[in-house]
Image 1 (spheres, rainbow, N blue to C red):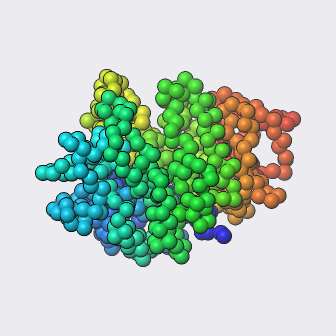
Image 2: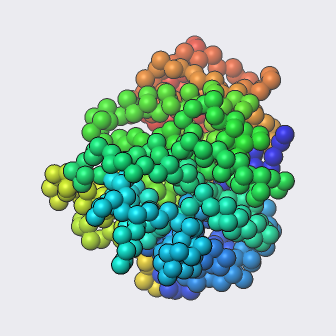
Image 3: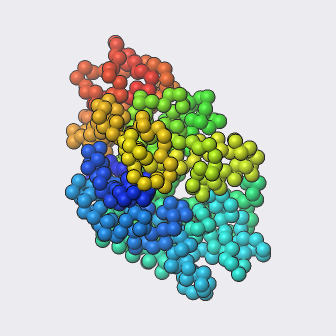
Length: 554
């Protein structure tokens, strides 16, 4: 059955860094409203907002203290209602970030649990007796350190798979689950079109009191088997689907990986637990890592292998949500392109390579103008707690401070959280005040205003790209067509065909800094839908691609 979101083009907004409207240095809802015309012109049909609920902001909003209200730093509840209303005028729908694996320690439920460990609210969280003078087990938090925090004055501990300020909820408790479903319906009643569901793979915990063999010098261990897609999670997901999502024309995108293709239909097929899940095929690779820094073509081969394996198996079954950037990753050029090769051609190639795969393409704010990483000179310049914890972990593992900082600069997630670069004005036009996080100095060269006036800019390339993706003539091919990998054996060539009936579209990307010639029967009657160069070089059955050239042929 066709759904409205099958042909959607998404845009992720990290509200804190998008547009400030009142000069306090923090992006806000009124700032987003002011930029709706821009997003409409870009071609966006659905916006995913990173968390905007009330929060102490220990983890940038992923520690929610009140699910029913907007954090004052972003505006008022009325501002959000206005955003829904105004977005509708531009045919843009809004998704919220649904953070229901954990809350903030400041949430009323957790405060009541701490006040009385025998109260019903204590069972809203994962609270366990210590193992003698030690935590219940030696699970490591995702952000480093023990995943258990002792409750003052007791020998009991609460579980936090993320920061110490984010106690994990106890999904085994039906009363807790009912509260969460009520929250979901509250926001649907407000007019949101669905949710991106954060960390949902972790809601099922199979507690194991046994100490795992340590996998690092901290004496701790990862134990994903017991808290990521753990056995029994299906019951929780099925209940949430049936009691909170079913019968509503919404889009639900889960932040989870489902490794076994035999489970895909159950998790995100037509009647799955979710509409879609993110495809993380590229996120484990970084061209600056030891594995690939001198062999960038090998990274491309890994991308091909992972992407097309999933695309082949997804046909007529599931829709992935496809992306190359988000708030948890460094910017895509630094991750996937050698530093000396980062320019318009390589950035536009990155856009083309994923945009026509089966699934929902999502653009992260600033990606469309080619925003880049902003490495720091000192760890003190970073704000993110996860970044600081990772730095300490590297020191513990024997790296020098210089080596640890170098690694942090390559991989940390704050690279993608610098304020949006709107213009050459002070603070890149993001705010008239002091920005909450330093603006990348390259805003004088990379900004919306400059690119808007340049027909050949990356921004205008993205506009054309999205227009092709949503072109009514090819839309069904891109949405429902089969994905067939092409030129698999050609190193550095990421190419595929989308085919539906007698219609087909071919995407060919040269991920190398060398010219690449391939055997290709080019029909003079075909149409060049996208090309990041001015010309096509074709002679007697041979197609020659310039370095980082990307073409789409209809």
